[in-house]
Structures are given as structure tokens and as C-alpha cells.
Length: 458
Ligand SMILES: *Cc1c(COP(=O)(O)O)cnc(C)c1O
Image (cartoon, rainbow, N blue to C red; front, top):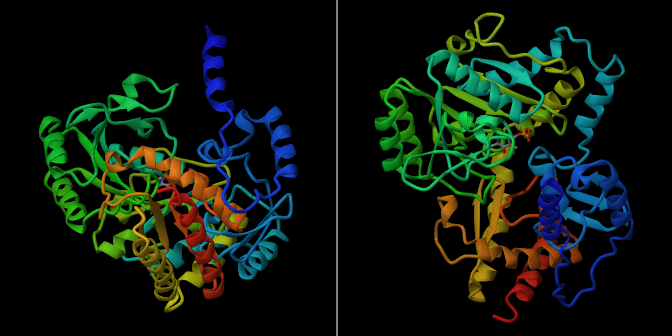
């Protein structure tokens, strides 16, 4: 039984994808391919996080040897302008000297103590003093952990069990949130991973993004049972599904009216669309905010924060237990302090966002001038390439899955032209402060050429 299931899985995964060549030879992946073969002996799929395995694009994963500024070098010596930026954390680019120096300085004194250090307070102070939406924080070691703890906190505060999430939002791999919509307006989720008890999924209600009617129906059907609504205020894990501000305001209100808590999962948007994240961008105060990615400057850090009142429910002050051996790790805190200190400087976001906008607008102008069915969605320094002619895409179900074939071609053509995007058309790209205007010009040229190839048989 098990073997036959495995066979089906492998048959799909190992299938040779036919190559559609553009006008450039494929980059050499000889060393990467060797390293991948070896890694497969030790890790499922050869990787430690599934999307890295290049299952949605051509070829084998590139093994990275070095990053500097906006550039990456792989094991075969290929050089790329990087728009993945480690999936978001590297808003200052790779190997930023200020972060590197601070990390090395702090490391001289040891790696971890399991006792408080002043560095934790320093990072917390930097955040709270520049962010009107949180008063107290707790550091964790990943975004997943931050979200998992925020959900527990919301349940602890409200003494309710159910949570409401949106189809197309990703909140890490915690059981309660690996749940997708079933059919119907308001549904209990179906688990989106094996290994999650159905009873867990039964506590998670899943509705469509940007759908007030569905949210209202859920609150009606599960009156006084919903502990919290959790949303990525800038949904950026399944395309970039920019929401109307009014929808987020509506969530704020319906949570207030029903004594439920509103959680903004800002693991991507936090310190990205501005120092105060999406809460600041939209000027909406959630009850709990989660952070990750940028907050650790490239090292593993997550955090959740709220008012002092709500945070007083967390142990040892309150009854909601949450802990971590390496939470607030001094080396990771050092990286976070160095990175956020740069972000807190006047004009940082204005410059970065303007640079990104110029970049995405000129790509859009090019695609439109050629009548390509292609749209660049952008907010702050996040962008998403979508092969669509829809003006807005605000719900997961509005993404055309068949368009991902075009992304696949684009991805390979871009690698062949020295531009690295995350290996899936559902992933967004990031511009960092290390991307100079010249780098962006170079990348643009590669993007134009790649689009021409994608659409050449149109
Ligand atoms: C990346 C991400 C997570 C998970 O964070 P990890 O550090 O990968 O565990 C959770 N929520 C959102 C919105 C994310 O983008």
C-alpha cells in the first residue's frame, strides 16, 4: 500500500519536463546538480524547505555559494541579480557590512546563554519606539512559531476555540493553519497537509479574501465562538493579493463587534511596506501582530506583539504558555538590531519604494506596449509577476493556474540572463536597498527579453 502511494508520488516528481529553449544556452548546473544528488541522500527531496526543490520550474535547484549586495553566486560560478532575497528577510541585500560586523562583534562573547541579555531589550525598544501598534513583544525563532503562539494567545484571551482565516494566506506550517477552504461560502477547512487531525481543522473556518459577505456569515453561524481573525494584511504568499483598505477596516470592525481579536500576520509585510508594516501603511490597529523574516536580519527570528494588556496573558505573567530555548538568541538579536537600525533611518522606505515602483512601472509599460497578457502587482518593495489581463487579483481562486506554465519559461530565461527569482510563479519578488538603479536596469533588460520569449508564439 505505502509503496504504491510512494510510486505515484515519485512518478509525478521525477517526470522529465520538456525543454523549450529561448535564444540563450542554459547556464551550467553541473556542480549544483551533483550537490543536489548528494543532498537527496539525506533530505526528503534534497531540501530543508519544499519550495527550494524547483518542482514548479525547470531544472534542478541552484546551490548557492555566496551572496553580496543584490547578487548571488551558485556552485557553478553563475552570477545573478537576486529578487528572492532569502524570501524577504534581506531588505538590505546580502552580507550587509553593518549586520556582518555587529554579528561578529556579538559572537565573540558566545552564542547563547539561555538567560536574558540586553540585546533582546535593545531590539524590542527599537521596534516599540518606532511602532505605535505594539507595546510588548515576545521573540521566537521563526515566523511559524510566532503565528502559532499568537493564535494560542488569542484563544487564551477570548476563551474561544475557533479561528477564521482566508484562502490564499499562508501563516507558516502550524497545524491549525495548514487548512484550505472546502466548497461553499463558509466552510470548515480541509487540511492541506497529511498528518493534521481533522478535529484540528474543524476549529479553523476558511473564507475567501476580500469577501465581506462570507466573513459576516461566519460570524453569524459561529456566534461567540471565534477567537480571532487572522490575515496577511498584504497577502504575499500566493501571488500578491492586494486587499482593499475598506476590507481590512471591515475586519477591524466586525472583530470589535464580536469581541474577537484581529491578528495581522506581518511576517512578510512587517518592516517591508514601512517600519510599521501594513498596520502603519493602512493605519489599522490589529490586536496582535506577528513578525518574522526582516526582523532577524537574515538569522532565525520571529516575534509577536500586542498591547501590554493582551501580552500580560503570556507566561510567566499569565496562563498562556510559550517558550523557546534559543528565543532571543544574542547573535540573532544582533543581526536584527543592525538591520532595523538602518530601516529606522529617515527616508529609507521612501527611497526603496520609489525605486521599486519605477522598476515595476517600466516593466508594466514594456509589457503593455507589446500587448502581452502580463501584469506586475506591487506594494512597497514587493512585486509579483502575473500572466493575466485582470486589473486586480484579490482572491486565491482568481489566479489562473495554467498561467504558471508561462512563469516557468520566464524563470528559466531569467536564470540564463543572470536574474534569480523564487522558483514558483506563486511567489513574490523583493527589491532590496542593495539593488542599485544600474542593477535594476540590467534586470529590466533581462526581463524584457524573457517576456519576448514567453510570448514569442503568441
Ligand atoms: C514566511 C511566513 C510565515 C512563516 O515563517 P517561517 O519563518 O517560515 O516559519 C508565516 N506567515 C507569513 C505571512 C509568512 O510570510
